[in-house]
Amino acid sequence: MQAKIQSVYDEGAIEATPLIGARGLSMLVDIDGQRTLFDTGRRGRYLAHNLDYMNIDPDSIDRVVISHGHVDHVGGLEGLLKGRTKPVDVYAPKTAFGSKQLIGFNGIHVSPELAEKVVFHIIEEWTELSEHLFVTGPIVYGDGSESFMVMNIKKGPVVFSGCSHCGVGPVLDVVADKLGIVPRSYFGGVHIGKKEEEKANLIAKEFLARSCTDLHLNHCTSPNGITQLRVNLGLKGVNDFYVGSTVEYEI
Image (cartoon, rainbow, N blue to C red; front, side, top):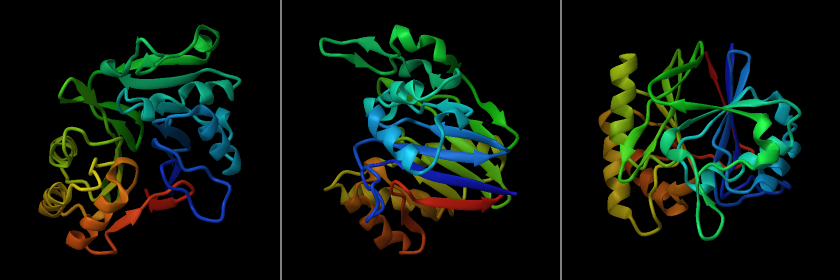
């Protein structure tokens, strides 16, 4: 059996396609005969466009996992709901839920007319989503918290990250403590800015120290961050994961 991971929302998109690259992150994971959408990007219409071009029916998605409440991870949720004919389960840390601001909302917000299309579940601890797929309890950072999705397969745990605001090391250690083996693969964002070369070097050391060297990075990692990680980890271990990119693993 195979597990399939697709990038459906990111700042970058595969060239020479109509796919839209825009600020945000969303990945679709097919495993155990189910589809889980991890985060929803910033804008619902861009998410809907990319899903349509990739022949992904919104109703085929069994659940949504929200890593944290920043708008570039939750803003596309309403767009997904508008494209569905049936309710969907949405898992999120308590800190991801929104509050009204002077302009719009901060965090998850669903308008009353779409409320019947979503069933919310608060992530408080490790939760089994299917036989090989889990979500961690919230890991605290600053004034927020972030949960991570974990796929446990033959080659070892695979981590799905929104931004890794708490740092890469703590995430890898939390997963290793729970599953008894250090993750071998890491997908998503690790929050490296354009001029944060020193931070990139430290993150590379955290990956190397735990032998996690199968990386598929995007979003807040930034192109400069990915380049600097490659300086430390090599070209083969650090891969771009733009919209339209697909990776498959044996379960």
